[in-house]
Length: 100
Image (cartoon, rainbow, N blue to C red; front, side, top):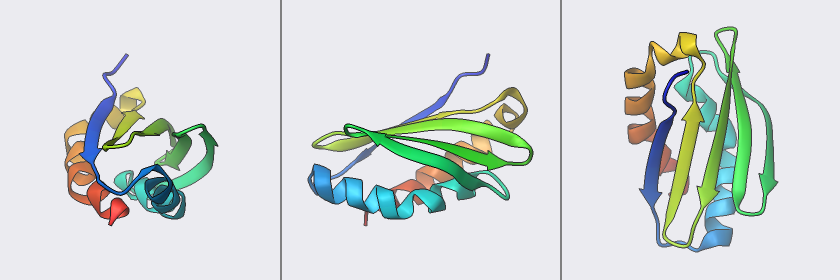
């Protein structure tokens, strides 16, 4: 089993504003996997659960929205775990833009 990619993104925008931005931008998150698309997404309280499908793989992911940060967990399947460093670097670069 591979270790999931986790990251925290600080914000000062309030829960509802961040939730709305994530809801509109969830499709952009799929870009971390080449050819990736969001296969499904749903909210449970302040947690967005979504699945990215790409390269013949499915990536279970979740984003928890807090008052001061967003906590993301991307659970890579073994094949994509080979690219974890590149995926992590892309997330660090692009994920904060979703909250702008």
